[in-house]
Amino acid sequence: MNVAFYTLGCKLNYAETSQLQQMFEQAGHTVVPFGTAADAIIINTCTVTENADRECRQIVRRALRVSPNAFVGVTGCYAQLQPEEIASIEGVDAVFGAKEKFRIPDLVSNFQKFDTPQCFVSELDDSIEFVEAHSAEHDSRTRAFLKLQDGCNYKCSFCTIPLARGKSRSMDFSWIPSKIRDLERAGYHEVVLSGINLGDYKAASGERFEDVVRLIDLMQPNLRVRISSIEPNLLTQNIIDIVAASSVFCPSFHIPLQSGSPEILRLMRRRYKAEHYADLVRRITSAMPDAAIGVDVIVGFPGETDDHFEETFALLHALPVSYLHVFSYSERENTPAAEYSAAGQSVPHAKRAERSKRLRMLSAKKKLEFYRSQCAAEKPARIAIPEQRNRETGLWSGWTENYVRVQFEGAATMLQQPVQVRLSHTDGETVFAKLVGMPHSPPSPTAAYIPIMV
Image (cartoon, one colour):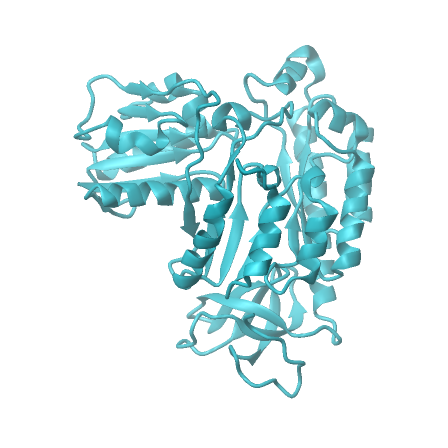
């Protein structure tokens, strides 16, 4: 049987889709690209987008235009939260919840279309287990995303993830070395540690995320490791110190802020204060002056006044952050924040759009400042991993260890392995660089040598 997959949402969803693909292949099926003829189509959904229903319907229609008789199954966060809504979509045969996601081949034997859509969705409780997963971002296998943690025990007032994913659970600590070594042997040059609430990693044997970071650093794998999004209250000084001294971990962090207003943070039920966040950013930049720091921020949360927004804007304007991911608040069923909106505290959509625009402009300014700072003459050469080559321009593109998007000239036959580049100038979206050293090459006379791999 030919099976096609489509994924919406976060990198963790992509990692889990990759795991599903492996399960189907092990069962004797053939995975084919989405958009080609298939006997079965599995759609892995997200609940963060406010248009989850519309997006899911569009994907189902696209799939059935190519394969009108295909079995269509839908899983993911949206499936766990709104199974009946998904089952009502024309063409959907089955809906699979979080517990059932990795049991699809067992739950459906012949993958024939059902006369009536079936819902395989159970309530989430403490019995839900951690399922390992990893995925590659490119066919070139330059970067892998390794799932270490799933679920969330936090109760942020705007978020449905705990309802969709269940309790926080983590990979067995003893598995981690072999997983890292497997990715190393597979030829990956970068591994991104991922989770729904990564910093809340806690193994059954008691180890926390700080222990994971220390373990991987001591392993000294022949690849670099990046930490994905981590809550500010869980990014400890010990983690900062390990990363700052490490030749393995990348000096880049993505730390959700959501709001710089104390009142809005309280309504959001976040577990830190604005002043703690500001102190955290300053401690990171003190330990790693060239570190990239990305920020998530939500505008238009119910009850957010102009003054509240200005508090957020002023905080972000003052902090040495590198870029912002700006989200316009959208109501989610079964959350306290949706009740705030229903009680008349909703922010007009035009106001949300206006605030988003201002923060995106600030993000562009911050990114330009950070990129320009990395082009200074006294800065050392950086390590970049060539990922894709533009045939028209002849330029390779990739990311440095401190999350600068670079483009540089290189032969089409160049292996996609870490190289040394000297950053030159930027247009605000990317930094143009010069290739100054290949892996294990002798030092360039114009640049201090930096070991490519340690």
